[in-house]
Length: 166
Image (cartoon, rainbow, N blue to C red; front, top):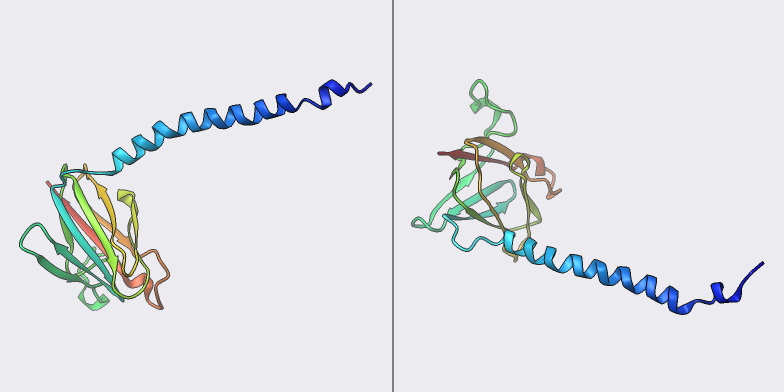
């Protein structure tokens, strides 16, 4: 009932192991090239550096005279009607729509994460390392985010607000 020619087919086993691996490599190489090319913006309109501190963000508009400001969460006593509690800041990041923007993100003390979910952005801020993300927004509005890393006792009190204008 058992044929030894079928059970001892080393050449066949080698072929059906190596052939799918070669096919996967041939599919992956062009995809990785396209993924790399879409991630890099050669001439961004803006370059903004974001530095995470406990418990606020510092922003630097490096292309425009080194404009630097801090962005702190507004305490509940300073909120206006309609403002979002724990998400509103005193200084928003203002960006244009339909313009490529490069965000360079780092941290001064511990791990942070610069996250705005509605824009699809999440980049870790690591001390001693400069991470980069690029995006082009298409709709004006005010977009809210928070540090999504457990960076300390008050890590959820690091809101990020980006105001996108035409």
